[in-house]
Image (cartoon, rainbow, N blue to C red; front, side, top):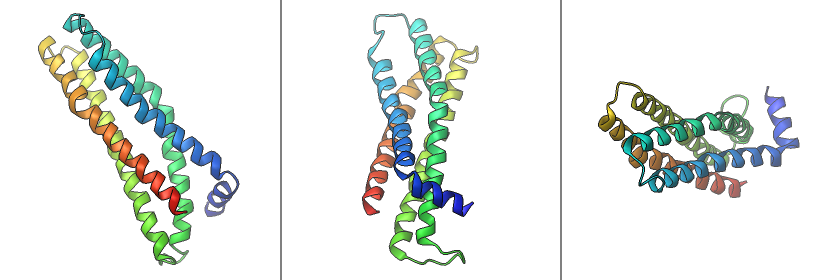
Length: 173
């Protein structure tokens, strides 16, 4: 497995990094677009239609994102394991302290993306509850308010921080 990852990261470095950055940009940029659209569009439309439109838009976007999230995770694992070999030897000891510090940032960045995935699962759950009979109209609007006011901006912020860390890590190579 180690040889396979080394071969991929040696022969296809630019392609792996490109796919990783592309998936991150689509994920974070799309969330920014969704936030702007849901905040500004349909101000004159009734609450019930606005709620349905927002919920449908966000759920459709999250379905669209599944392949990009998967691609981001796969490429992140390839890059992290490829870089881990620079930091930690086969016996498990640190071989380069500078590389180990960078590897710590890589794992921190991975935990940020993991938190974003969990936040997205929470948003899907809230939207599902808002669409069902579990939420009355007023309560459903409150559910969507939570997504638009807190959860989506938190994911945008975390994604922006993770992208910045990724750019910083890339300059360390």
